[in-house]
Amino acid sequence: MQRFPDLNFVSVESGIGWMPYLLAYLDWQFANSSSKVLTMTPTEYFKRQIYGCFWFEDKTAKLAIDALGPDNFLYESDFPHPTSMTPGPATVAVTPREYIAQTLGDLPEDVLSKILHDNAARIYNLDPLS
Image 1 (cartoon, rainbow, N blue to C red):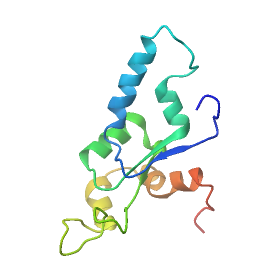
Image 2: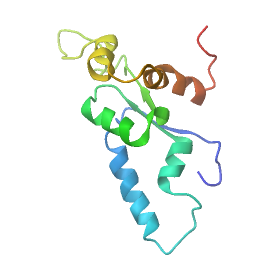
Image 3: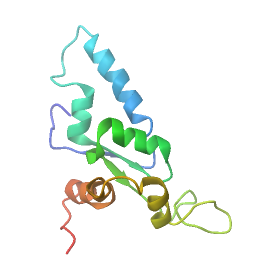
Image 4: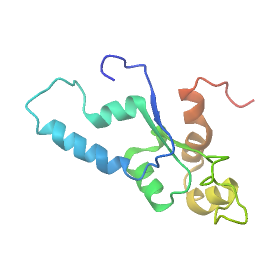
């Protein structure tokens, strides 16, 4: 990431609840290391180049968003995989619209917009909604 600052990494199908802990750990290790090869903290690299996706987390997703901000997270439905947000007779999943309303509905509109659209549009250089 240091050598290729414009290269983005997206962690898909792994959730985001674990990311604040990992970054706190890595930042601690970085601060307590005598080797200073990196010029920024792991959290600074993360915020510049790494993105995480989530689809069924509720409390842990909101904790990650609160801890790290909304700019590095994307909501995914994971369709058509068996663990996707696709309701059916063999799943407890609700529709993505229901999930967003139940789990993330109290987030500000601009935060939801980033997670549901804007971040992906920015990362993948997609045209804005018309």
